[in-house]
Length: 372
Image 1 (tube, rainbow, N blue to C red):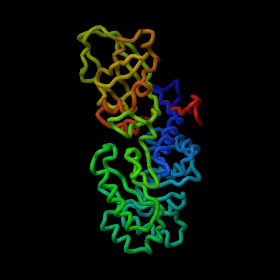
Image 2 (cartoon, one colour; image 1 turned 90 degrees about the vertical axis):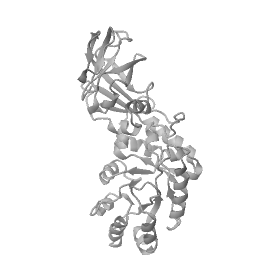
Image 3 (cartoon, rainbow, N blue to C red; image 1 turned 45 degrees about the vertical axis):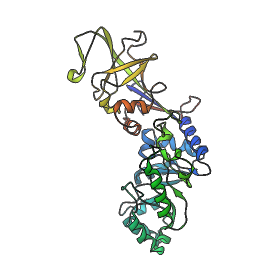
Image 4 (tube, helix red, strand yellow; image 1 turned 180 degrees about the vertical axis):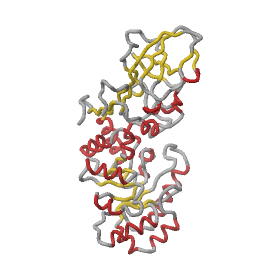
């Protein structure tokens, strides 16, 4: 962890807010159970801190993308179920067994490898099955599912405990593909032995009870990203990102700011240079259109974002507030992750997962104490 006195930026993660978001979803989807997706290091916020907080709140199932993520998570979560979405690459089945990880099997070749491992008496844990209902990424298509259903002995070796699929357009509530995928999921899952079903991720949790089945799998919503675009965000914000001012200078026309001279100073003002850039996950596309907040005042980002620095026009902020060492709010109470994403021309998922490693990170509880 970066020393706070050395770091140019501070990233605060509120674990209590993440737990509150998980509980809000749990209340809304009951009696379905709620897993927690903590892939990509809990969307960049620290799986080693986030996952134990959720486990303490009652979460029993965690989901990652890769084997290495699963192995790392098992070190901090000895008991809960951990599903690995990408399934086993050839020759890695033994690692899943050694760390009690549940693979999500996406293809007949993964089925064969896992069934062989299980049949050999390796003590392999159960697995999950992924049906492709329209994403055309991972999962069994209908023909593969027919071949699998015709070999019940293989399914017996695999010991599946969950069938899942994934919605392509859940963030668009009225998109016709949602209902189409749900119907296809029910139809195709009916060809397999009866077992718990899972279709909804973050957006799907808010499409209605018919999408919940037995288990929902929120990820982004836990971390404050709006799962209902176009409507008020029901989730609590969970992070605050602040950048330190390194220098403030007086400027006037016709000067320019930053690489490429893309910003021309219109009149007398002051420019604050902040120790944060695209190497820290502050997107280059925010140049000349992003903003921060300082002393309750919106301060526009001027010029291009460079690797380590970004500049803000702080002419509207009193000099005593806009001074070296002061913290500019970049994500926080007055500007959400989704707000920043809109200015950057991307989505909140990318903003979170791009946050760099140079920030001083701290995890707090609702009472404001630093979490272990």
